[in-house]
Length: 226
Ligand SMILES: [Zn+2]
Image (tube, rainbow, N blue to C red; front, side):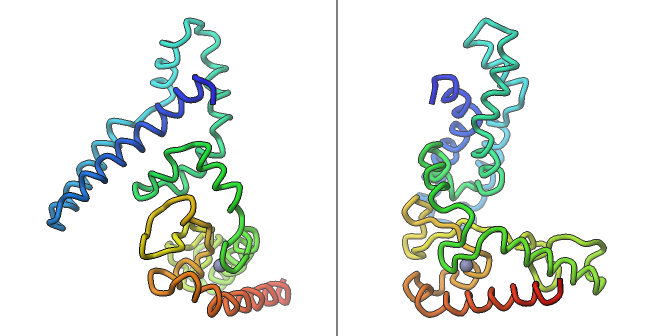
């Protein structure tokens, strides 16, 4: 990363992530559950408030580094472009528990390149999941459960998991940490069903073959009726 890119990354993402990591550590010391919850909520609020950055703020900060005002607009667009993919993933997947994953730009993007687009257990792709969500959404609309045709991966039109997107999953529920080694993408079915109830080895050997069969049947259904 160039100095400017690093400056921008810190301003827009890392400062906030580091502040979050810090209060999560502090929270570990609080034994009382209610106190802990209140502490986390208030810290989360203040971090959201203190690290909210907008275009004008970023531009004014950039202006402190270079005196060339004309250059700032181009520079800003360049920086947006450089971090675009990270930004989309951050918007979609970041939460406070995942702060370690997102704090290192190159570490995260490397992890992403390795795992993207496919469930690390059953192998279904993001595209195939989307096709099922479209099919199911259309069927829900036809039956009157959705007011208009929209993607919905669920059987009952509920919001949760409706997009049928890949989720970031922790393989080992015991350590339960979001590290690069312990995290993969998983489809909603693998992630939801494995949960913290089935270990990785059993999930792969006993359940994944059935998940694959299930998805194969979904695809046949899609072909038959389209
Ligand atoms: Zn899967």
